[in-house]
Image (cartoon, rainbow over all chains, first blue to last red; front, side):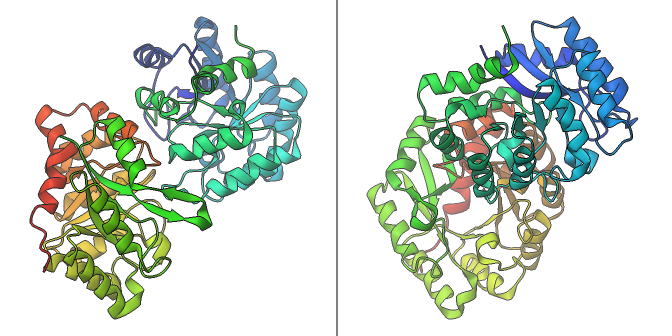
Length: 247
Length: 247
């Protein structure tokens, strides 16, 4: 099974707006079986209806989609929104985007939201690698503060076309066994291979980053790694199945 | 035919990186690439005074497969210029500059001096062009505008967040060429072709540790015409280096 552990759908303030149907179409083209999907940042800035719409889409496509709630820790009632999304809406985790919502991932504002994830035993997906707000070591700080919560960092934890953030991410991975990395758009396949070698294949998860990055290309990124087939299978889907409790 | 315009051969013990010519050839063969342009990771004479010789030796091992660019640190005055001249005497085909490692601004006189030597040999200059200060498309364009007769290649065409800027500035500055390596958006390759012309977009991988196979697939996913794809994958690189003079 191939599981894409990060795609966004919905009307987007920042990038292309996409629908769940468009995601499902590209999944079919790329032969991706299931996807973890989060709301895009809506032009209204209001994540409550965005999460509700996502939950409805997930319910309508339960065999294909798993949903994470997007929460902005800056807003009043963020923790309550997170509880509602996990409880009443049935979403399976929390998505934090420090760059688009403008907060430092290692700052105190996220604590009450991550408390909800800890209490519900659901993962937290972090849009990682953004300068000043979600750098590798900053994500590591948060992961260290909440050792029982599974944190998943997009973009391999760092976004830099010189690979400058990779050592920081490796430090964070070493310190935090509860930190996992995704593959979308990552610079250098040997970085991904090194993550597998140093920290284990179970710490790396395939993602497409749809719609910013192209699932048809990104699904090939784990396949381009020079690792054995069992590792590729784990990265492409086995790890997500285990983490998300997928059938 | 496919020509990879951006590959590395080097041994950098401090980083634990050993990229041999044989690895480049292996990855090229995996991807169906006929010829490649190699350069060091570090700058001569700064970290490795023997960098030019290292690349020359690598090319001598595979004379039918590899060409060379000289990666030179601009700050060493006459020594930098001498090294570059020696490189061209040895048959090198271009100059590589990396402001992240050199912190030499593209528009600085030290850099421009080396670029003028390249121009005198009918050779292009390839810049690392990403999201880091001194490497952004506007920073590199500042050099290209000072020497309008210099073919200036934006390696990685702006990285992750400066790709739109790379396309915009290439529309305005006609001696800029966009090189596709590492930048993860196939759609932006197509957009670049549509906006500035296929003759100014060029395939590179940043291999061998960025997967040349994945990077070729990225160009194919751009959905270019057969003619445009041929330009991007081979003819543009061949055109840039075919008239380079030794003396």
